[in-house]
Length: 120
Image (cartoon, rainbow, N blue to C red; front, top):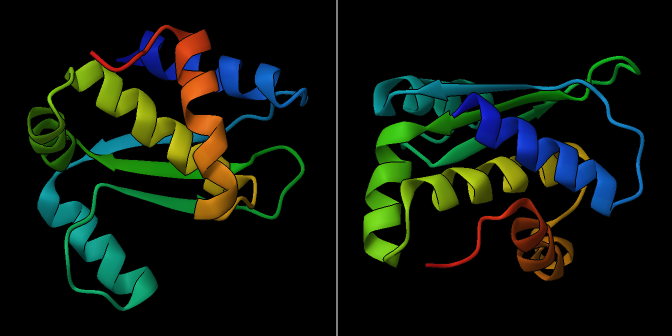
């Protein structure tokens, strides 16, 4: 998974013509992501990905992905777990960069295709 995450990070910054900035990506269980969601957003529900931006020049922030939900979503959407993890990583990075969901939509496929994670 490390290579996959690194590829998505590199491709995202390249596609957006931005200087790469360090960030962390962590994989957690449903219980852990539910606790984080409750603590930081007041929502006592597990979710697939959370982003925690930092207001530091040297570190963009943290992306937290629930591997259990990612696995279920990959099966539900009919594509590989790798493609789902790539999508969630990209989604989290775009949130860290300040994009809202509408602005993210046109970026998903070009970036994921460049990174090699097309829909199966």
